[in-house]
Image (cartoon, rainbow, N blue to C red; front, side, top):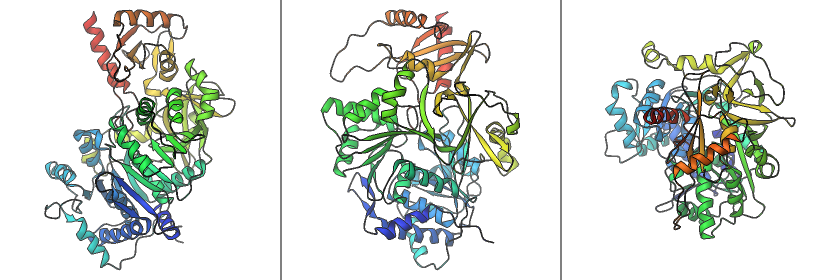
Length: 564
């Protein structure tokens, strides 16, 4: 008996049938190109048939290296409909990591802009199977089948599109690498359809809205829901570098009703609005994702959007999204003050499709659920989750050659997966606790906890307290030395001076002395041995919001060595 068809691209067809002339995508740069839902739906199917005529079969791994644009979104849906497994990597990972990630998937082809094909050709020994190549660029460049020719091939084809089921692989998506080398996460078709359904249900998103998509993944879901997606002019791999004037212009010109972005973007945009008095009066639903967002950013953002607007912060990871969600008013009225006093960051209640548990912290592999110790409410432990949107596996290289060159990928499943009968729990890598309302309080990454002779310190519990001090913009707790015998250090980034205003900064000697006194008054923080200053704390490449504490720890060790 054939399994039921599952493919998130079917939702695009439904949206296009309901409102064919509605704009599906708008590029907020250059000539301001746009495409209707019907055009996008038709072009995605034609390109899917073109890919099949080219030689793509169900499960064929195709690397997609195209910047967020109408072509990118169309090709995503085309690849989904062709049955291929698309490979997605962040351009901000850097060439070395991009090559490593792509090579580990052993792609059988590249659908890429010329720069992506140049990488394929320069590193051709890493991609021996890449024969099915499509050039999304000038037709005269001999880099593969031109996109226009692929379209023509699809127009002439009568081939049936393949039947995809829930368990069929749809994509390989790489983690941001904020706590180690990026890992390839296998997304099934059920992963995407569950994510779409949960996001739509949780936030009451309806067709006809307009979204400013500062995070492309959510832009794909919007298109499938019948929501017009506006792609702003920005470097999506470096959201903190976005020009707030361009974001504001795109938002107001297109009268956006919702927007997904990282905390770095909301901080940037809300500061600009605060300084200029501008706003986005049509913006009714704000979504901040990728890292905890501070109460001050929430308040500042809500001041410059539609009165009564909602601000939601979904929580999850590349391997499991979404897991939970919380709305701004609950943060401002209930949890923010607790966060400022060291309780961690409340990320809300779980979504209906997810199960979660908090278990005793261990860095060792856990084979079966029977080997875990579930903790009671209020006790800090490691979060594990399971559900249809939770990835069951990481990428494991197919060939011995690849496995020897990328040995870590073979152990990811051992470290992150726990079997429970026929199902799998995912060790999300975060630590925290459940409260009496079954809300999860995030205390930090398990790998970034600092274990000293005086006890264990958790990053969010420490940093949120330190950040309340007047001389601190952001802070990062790090451990110096081997695990179980670490020395705790706090790295301070001072707040930026208001634009156009000259502020005389206190000397670091005075600041450090006052911070030392400030920490000594807190029994949980008085054992922090070192206080260092850094001009700009390094962050992850995807959201520019998660602090790279591993990198900071190496820097701090060198600084302390110099001071001796």
